[in-house]
Image (tube, rainbow, N blue to C red; front, top):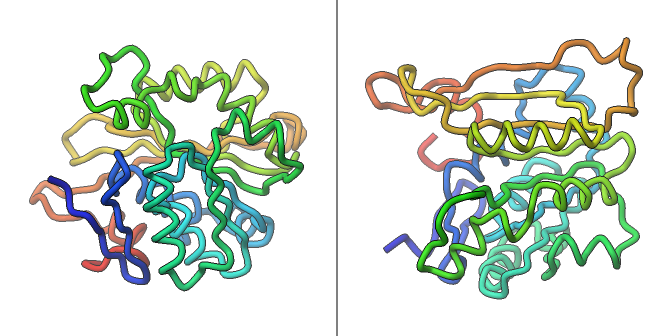
Length: 256
């Protein structure tokens, strides 16, 4: 049985009710989309333009809490349709130092876009990604992990309606799903700004892909420059955490 809580340096995530517990994917995305060692132009853009964030499918609220910790002046909205996950997120937000800036919204993205007038500087999501897999016997886990609950075309359409023209959108997916998503996003007029391939060890294949997207029309093509692409390895050959992974997550993990 998974632990009912996970302690970080500045907050604790209680997860007794949510089907999806704290995992490496969420922590990677929460740290990567605001990493201090990002190129200076991206870092400055994130620090000065990310005034309102939306975390789509917040689950326990771990990514939203990470954003609140880093961006002291930002408001963070956290969207979650599952009633049990909302119980955990509400508890975690209320017990954090940033309760007044964290706003839980118990709704689906597809419905939220129809009733809000808010527009966001940055949208982030750790989306469901099982596309053709068999459903899990655990109904809640199936809903949380199966892309049928938030197909990529509906995700992109929702983000398009909610994101400011100059805003950015980040997510994490397995390699195969990242290729499917990239085809859909490119066809819909999105520009891939950053891409990080994540490996478990130096000798393993790509486990996850972190991506940051912007609207294709926000900058003239001649001024875009090349996409930034790199690789992150979580463990060394000796099965210890790599220096790059420690550097990325040290503001959050207790053990770093």
